[in-house]
Image 1: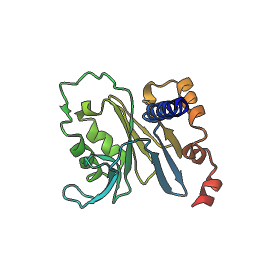
Image 2: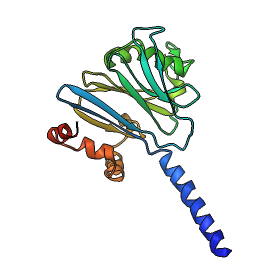
Image 3: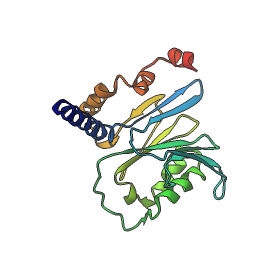
Image 4: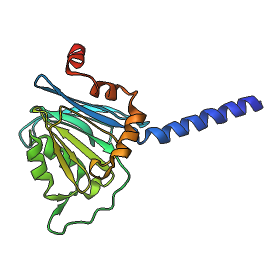
Length: 208
């Protein structure tokens, strides 16, 4: 009986520890090769109710496909113009509100407005810069368009890039030191995303 109790305790401890580690263990990568852009993401979550749904262009210019859970909030998605996005959880960031800007009141509507209206990251940056993004103070959003450009939206900062290969995890790139990024790299170097992002164009092409 004692052996069974110890085994149960060990299993519960392992599961709880894994849940805590995985709650901040998501990652995303963007690869552009031969004129095509691929965006990959893994969502390490124990949450049930995974859902995929399609929406016609009820407003804006484009229809879109979304992935998420049964609460209807888009955790990721792609529109007809080849714009794709996903989000990553970060530790909450205290951001001072700008009184000259509007504040995002409905995060779901904010995401859908972007996904069903725009096709380039430059246009998204212009749109998002009008808002205090307070509901996203615990999130980093990454958008990538079909031209290979990407936009990282932090709670108070936005970064546009055009690297052929780019990877991000649960941190704000603008305030994370190179040493911290390297530590994350060491932790994630065995993941599929990191192996793909480290491949040469020839190796990636061979997988397609």
